[in-house]
Length: 175
Image (cartoon, rainbow, N blue to C red; front, side, top):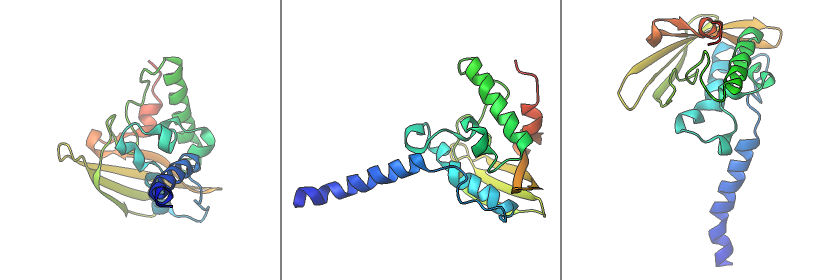
């Protein structure tokens, strides 16, 4: 009996890892969810990317999700741009195309502390956090739009990257 009791924490960890790996990104996001809820759900589902390369435990990173999963958070235009960039990366055997970083952390080596999600106006949501390694404060602004399926993200503005827009970056011709 004592040997079995020692295995319970390991069994719980294995069950949790399996459940996380099988969970569907965006699941539970209802059409009535407002802009702030959509952005918060995006971070809830993909904040693990700041932990490092843990695809086996959590699934594919945001930028590698299929269109159906992306459309749970993003409008069709932005979802298509992300899918096209991922296809370009695959064609070029892993070389960056237009997106050279994790979109929700504005970094190719994501990390974050003091994450804050704040509604700005009816369709805008601010996200701020600090890179723990160098103390840099990062500011992103999510632009959302009401679609037939509910609120979706139509663009991300990277204030620390000279107010660059994700849609503009992804719309460039591929290298």
